[in-house]
Length: 69
Image (tube, rainbow, N blue to C red; front, side):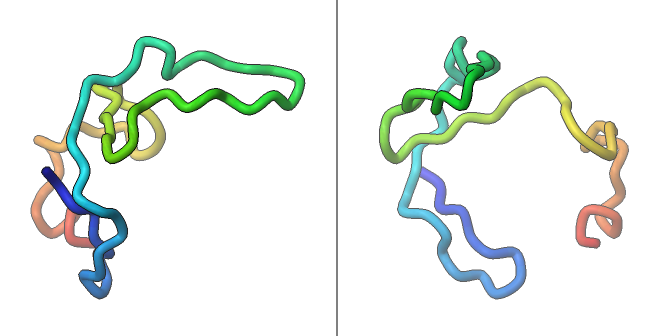
């Protein structure tokens, strides 16, 4: 189990959560202002293995100083 915390003050932001596989429907788009249905069970989280968003770099190439900043 993991607990997500604030990087600034260390306060808990979540209850304990379990990492699960990313649901296959996660990248689905819904139009016409419709809300997406719940994709995951309560107290779970998933990580998309594909890079997205800036800065488009692999973590292995980031120095500890850059990661801290």
